[in-house]
Length: 556
Image 1 (cartoon, rainbow, N blue to C red):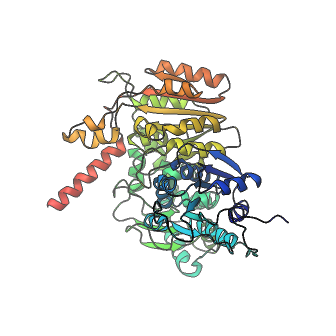
Image 2 (cartoon, rainbow, N blue to C red):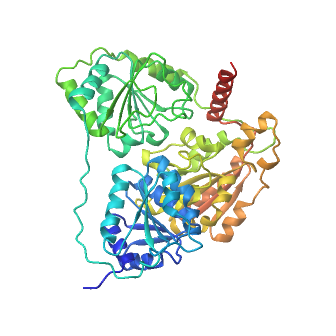
Image 3 (cartoon, rainbow, N blue to C red):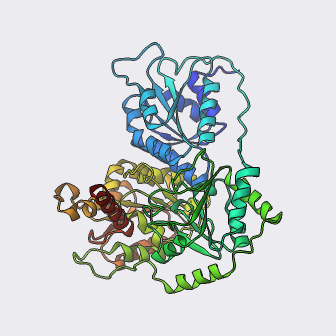
């Protein structure tokens, strides 16, 4: 029997949970990567350590399967911190395997990596010779059960030493806590008595596989349904209003505001979802069912900590057992159908703009018609963040991977696209939507995406500026000089790295993308779209208005 090193033991245990590893090789993780390759784990090299965790994060969001990122110690580790913080904030299970200071004591160049991770909310599990496997298993189970990012640290002086013999405990069985007799009974009674019920699903409902149960519950009650951007189309069907929050239509938001009982299933009710406090009516009763241990928003009146799928199924059973759903008639859905048909949709955009550049709204509409139907969209953070969920058809909840929104970061899009591309196994085309500022931050991993993707389209909303800052601060009269970016020829860069590309200055220029798709959509196509900065996204207007209201309240 071959003796495993400490790094080999870590890789061996990880191989029971993951098939893909993303990262950059260095002194601190070279032995781990050697062992991982021998065990058959697929390693996707990225060019910046920040991409290691971002790619593993997006891999999970796309597939629901755990992946690992890996870096060396010191600067390799600190380069990964923004992506690590995003995964913690977004509650994404992900594992970072990294080198660390020797167990004998820190060297002059070492930093306290565990303390840094703790500051971000990530737990660090430092392996030892005698318990490398058990500690690795403990770390992975912690990440999966708590839906968070963890760090597995391999001290530099232990990495290549023989690991001790150990028997690993059986993996933990997932535990579900359901307050059936109390909380769920009350929820069933509230829903049964509602005249205008609304079910709002979030990513937690999607991850729990609760779509069928919630859809049946909505049909039983005659409820309207909606989803957060991360649960888009999960409850699509009769009575579906679309996305809740700043990416939805005003008509849909008006209907949501008239609901008398709102069941929030697996959604955190972020400020964006809540339209900065204006989504739900002041008299509505808000119920939240979530795997979290406590309510995530002060508007919640009744909270049940439970698995959403199990809870929805039990509520259906309670309705069968005698709780009446007759108080709600078909009138609520009929009214919604009429108002949605008559109400305004998203603004289609203009053919011409003051500066002669593309209107991002008309561009987004045209792209939706061109892009392959079978698509998975990775959305970087930035001013343009709403154009995809507002204007593009997103087939399934897992087909919209919005990165950076939890930590309010930009620049994670390219790295995330690498992970999403590796997760796709059914011939779908990956579509990355990015701004020029964020794209430049992650530019080193355009080469990684070209190598990883079998079919990918990169859409760059290139306004030669940091658009959010232009609208937020430039509109107040602050100097725009630091907010501007010299116009970059991303098309030329893409061609140099092996992608096909085109500069899109008019909608007619999209013919180059159409031709590439018609030819089989193989490889990577970069569309460098030159958009105007004169169009402000609706969510940005709402956010700015909310900030002004806050200032006025403080001043008053």
